[in-house]
Image (cartoon, rainbow, N blue to C red; front, side, top):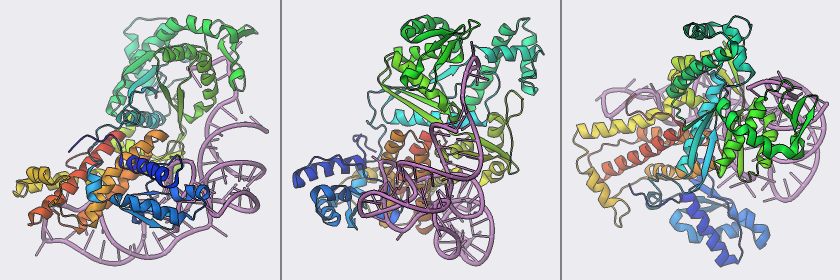
Length: 524
RNA sequence: GCGCCUGUAGCUCAACAGGAUAGAGCGUCGGACUUCGAAUCCGAAGGUUGCGGGUUCAAGUCCCGCCAGGCGCACCA
């Protein structure tokens, strides 16, 4: 496959339209990217540009659409009720396939921070959702050309760490439970006595468990930042930069975040002289700012939404003018037997991400998380997820991929593959091609090239589920095609054309699944 | 009380800066395996997009007011 066009099919149509309306109608107008229609009968892309131009040009939309579409015949443009639909011809689709990287974000340095769970217990299913979303966003931004740093902030300082220390000494009612007991057994060999050092030792042990879980879930981080370490390095400088906005009240040091739109001023140093979590976060964010990122992406549980304004305030104080994106991921409500199940780490009643992966499998768990948009509340019924593990949508998509692999295996076994690679070279993008494609193959190839537009959309919205949803419709088209059409037929041109279609679909599914962090198996 | 999020088919969810006949999966009902993998396909049933106003060529999407649920509103993290 070739690899020359960083532009997507949709972007290409868009810029063609921009030139067109400049020439024809003498206007400069921002043209939106063509969209993916809900209904595939309308083609693989459509644009509503004629409606947008109608009031400007004082012409009926249908007429405008007609005039534009005559110049877009090579993209398969058809006008219907003012809309311009694109049924992309095979030759055109082939120009936009096999892209390894888009240039939407090339040259951008982006920091993605996510999970950052307190090392006071194992990751639970809520962290799992954030992990899946954050990791997938990182993959998508990277695919769009960005230089992405994936960061985990370790909250290894503060009161919770002391509390876990106290719990291990048996002096606290919090963090009870089997897991803490197992940490306790490891700590006892270390001969520590005060709650703080015990708490810190515990946090390191727990962090190792967290790393193992993340690895099982397919997550890798480029950077691990310790709160304890970073606050000791950056607190002083942060305080100096914030000096103008600090004041004492009742023995505590406050930061005037209200000057930047926060509801109330926030305490950075408590009256007992210790920094708050937010106080240390100021230091951490100074560390972020000093690394000169073009964009800071933050994935948080929705319960942190009240935290956004104060961080924005701190970033303003530090002079950060670049893009700050907060992706809020809504809560996961755990259901068991269809009934709400209350989780609490401090109470020791939670379902760990590890347990969930054990029962349902990493691929299925990730796919379920990424099927929903991040801001929809998610009811996760454990029993249902287990029960449906064999009829989960993830297998639908993976199966489509496995089927394509299987076809190539079968073709090779039956000596129906010989000459395919040469044939492909000779007929890819060639005039007088021996490629024989029906409407079904045309559509599959077109959809596969539209994938890259879908990826752009998901990057702009920081929303992996866009890709998930698209993959399901691509898989649906493929399964339907497979059922209807025999691939390994005698006629060589037909057989190779169909194999090529399968290869293109396979590549698209693999690319998409990879961005979700889900495996694309050759056999199931 | 204030702020953020959500309300779409029996259930779980889609619908990309407002666009076409609101789409899937699960479940239900009826069909398709002597041929490349039936973890599949084909078909049917299922909707006043929580309610009421408004904005316009066009509203699930935007604005206002209700109703219901979730989450915040710490010198916790």
